[in-house]
Image (tube, rainbow, N blue to C red; front, side):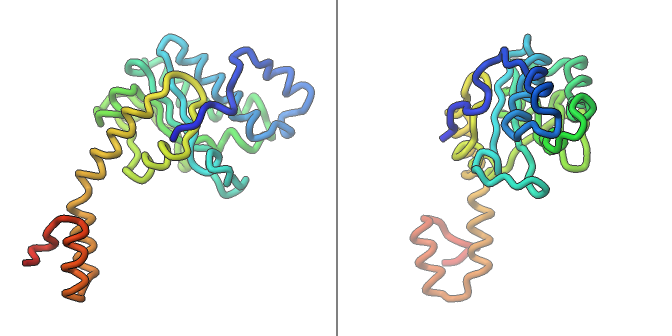
Length: 209
């Protein structure tokens, strides 16, 4: 179940004052998440953004030097060219604004309309990854990534679309089930075990009679 926001509760947080008091290198992980969330909200203010945090941070398993900060940003309509141009360079801009901070370079994920994300449509999309950032035409999570988002994700800002996401996961699992079943069949050599698995799954595996 997607949890309520524990990181971003006030859009009027005075980040500059925090930095002035603590110094860029003293900002915590949560501070960095709040700041980045605020920046994204500001850029997409007229596009009703919904922002999710998932992965190791949401699972309370973040390890600096090993982990990423995974986010998904969904908007009411397609991101404009101007918005995309700002967002694609936002990580670098934050590094320049807060030199010495170790967290801003670790943000990864996709930013696109909820319609494109939920229905697999191609449209203007901003992608942040380990190897860099770019404006592309799609972004999607596999069924396991989507399940992780639903199970442990945190809604940082905006409207929760968890119910729609849950339906999408079920659709993906149904589509992938035949391949999964065939993969199981290929690994089973025992005839009796194969029959038992077929009965459990309710399918005939690999043409087995």
